[in-house]
Image (cartoon, rainbow, N blue to C red; front, side, top):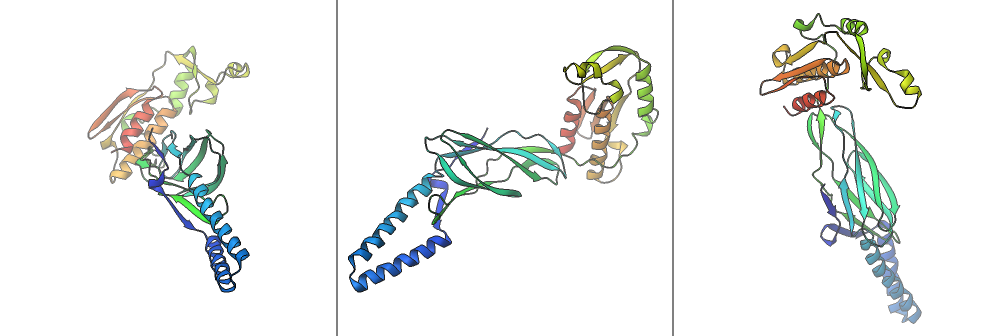
Amino acid sequence: MIEQCLSRDNLYMLPTRHGFIFSLVLMAMLLLAVNYSNSLAYLMCFSLFSTVLVSMLYTHRNLQGICLTYGESKPVFAGNLLSYTLILKNQTQRDRFDIGIDIKDDKSRRCDFAAHEVLKIECTTRVHHRGWYTLPAVQVNTRFPLGLLFSWSKPTRLEKKSLVYPKPSSWQDFPVRYSGSSTTQTQSRRNNDDFSGLRQYRKGDSPQHIDWKTYARGKGLHSKEFSGGEMPLMVFKWNDTVGDKEQRISLLTRWVIEAAAQGIRFGLELPDSRVLPSNNENQASKCLTLLALM
């Protein structure tokens, strides 16, 4: 896990709008003190100036030592929102106040966190293209304690990537050689099979096969498995599709999703790679990963 900590090398500081106004007021006070040789005006002017100098130190230290990293993110399909976790670690004994977090394509937010606290922030961004997506850079800033100075970090790229699956096309029938293996026929064969046991529920399982009695006893969702019938076996091939490269990938993605949802044994044959037929839980992920990285 890549982690980057903020230090003098990647922190910057400038006066805020209020800071500029405050500086003009101090200059006016200094001119009045010089013009009238007023010792109280000198005292007030230099006291306020020293306060600004001290606040510079606190503004800088409010960011220094914060460490940034990204948590794990799950693959999504192109066109959807990608959810990921930004992790901020305060590895010092100082509390942090008014910390601003700016991420491209995500709303800005401000937060406080205590000494040695680990702060986890859920973020989202919309992804449009398949393949590896590099999570956006993070910029951290603060105006603590007086709001006269603004300190910010250089945009931090943590080089964290998340996989984006291809966007599935609208439904099209399975290849002609499998036209006899419709969902209805598959279900009817299963309904006539002998009960062979229970397994963990998988997304796409028919509600008719869920063991509701087990669920009512608080043991989670389980689906009934049957034996004795013929499970269709499908191998989706690149030559089964037409159109440009993205259209072909999109259609193969749709077939993989539908076959996995129906519990069908399926494989995939691409111009430079092949996945052997299976219906285990990782089969769809394996095929979708190959399609995403073509």
